[in-house]
Length: 349
Ligand code: 2P0
Image 1 (cartoon, rainbow, N blue to C red):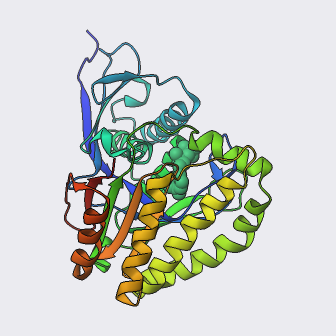
Image 2 (spheres, rainbow, N blue to C red):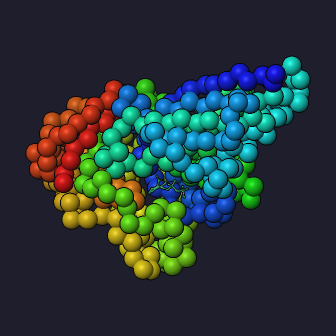
């Protein structure tokens, strides 16, 4: 009788929120971006995907269960991740014939998010990062997080940044095969332990225009976009890395807000225009501006992704002046808090 043993490994990957935004692909198949980006990883205590990867000759086909619901694995992104990881395992098996032949066995992937779906957070980043690392652990691959980021990027661009905690850069790279388009750590979360994030849930509805299609319409139609990719982002990348290394919140906050504004300006400059911010989002921006005016310096920084929900960064010492005021102005705390880079959720609906 054939070996029907079930081999398995588990891991977690965190949610990341970009402070220099990825928007635009130069190669849609390999998910190669038109600009580099930087993200802050939120604490895994409350915001992470937990994934178990198993393989066995007793399984009949590759399967993926996300929050107990069966997902299609036949798409090119998931297939690219499976293919790359299997080929790395096959190379290991070839060089060490005593290893079990896992590379040919069907995979069973089970994933759970521990953050409320209602938070409206994009989960594809944590999802693909956890999927790739769980299979790499199952296959006992000697790959570094940066090696794995090259694979996770093919699942979803922003996923490459969730292979690290803390402050992470995705270097766009220049090569056509994408081998240099990888994530690297700028600093671990412990480098700036007082950083906090507040998530304002403006709407938990699914976004109207997906990131994948929205960014390609921007690339094809926006005149602002080219200037952003060639001039604005390289400047913001340098300023952001310096601000993080120097723990300079003034600089960090200014670049974070200008980046968000630049990204949403190119969305508006897309034809037809893409509107991700709504009236509540704009109200949140005004409250942050009031907070900073009152403080006489930048103590709060907003950023918005491909949807109306706000993420507000601030330092722990300013919790009352930032989170307290925002909660008072925009709604009731509905919250979850986490440890390192704290996340609180509040509903502004
Ligand atoms: C980011 N976003 O840097 C930017 C900011 C949204 C706005 O990465 O097509 O879901 O899977 O590579 O990674 C959303 O894009 O797109 C995103 P795909 P992804 O976080």
